[in-house]
Image (cartoon, rainbow, N blue to C red; front, side):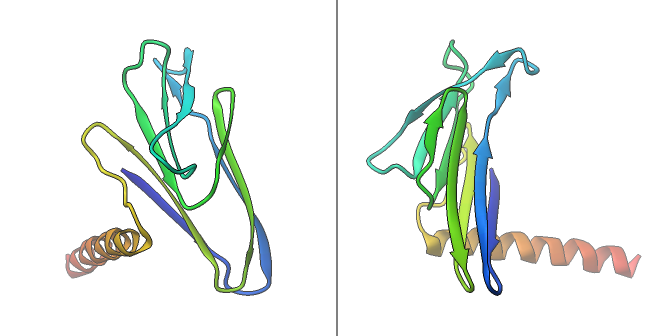
Length: 119
């Protein structure tokens, strides 16, 4: 799983999410479709349907050909996330689980940095 978050610290920013995966070493473009009962979930796969990659976000992506795009103006303190998952990897379903994933990733990173500093 690949998880990304963006937070506006002050003022405002225009956040743009663009996702255009290519398959077979870039020779085959993906075909998107909305998945589940919300617009925050979509799946992309090559024409033969394997492998499939899932996009989960708290944005509302538009599916334009081989690309998924979303825009939102973030004000100070607002945050958005997106996750790409594949295979058996389950994306975070909510803001709480997203924070748990992010906290776990930061703990692992801190352990790696600490171990490297001790060497």
